[in-house]
Image (cartoon, rainbow, N blue to C red; front, side, top):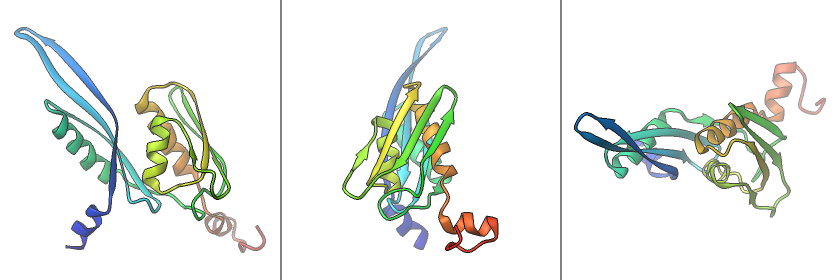
Length: 163
């Protein structure tokens, strides 16, 4: 039962809906692709892509995939611990921590991911591609590189104070 409660507090955001046409012998087959980001707004976030004949089923499939691909992100209050660069294909997303009250300074796909993860103060810049899929993947690449001071201290075998 606890698993069901967890799903209720997840916030999902549809980033893009793409209409695709496949030309077959009998005419054209229409289907929809939906790119969805799901997060608990407390450091957990995932993304998924769903394809179906109807938009709602595509979104539902995307959400199911997003829940399976969740990653944990170390947060420092309402921002991140350090700046990172996430890359995917031609997409480069730069994430920088910002002081309280700055807000989310980010473009479409990156903003959706930041809101889902629970980051409220961050400065971002998306360079290169504007393809939402690659921008989201680059953002996730950046988020997966984030590490807390505790994790860094542990890996170096020193205390957080020595850091």
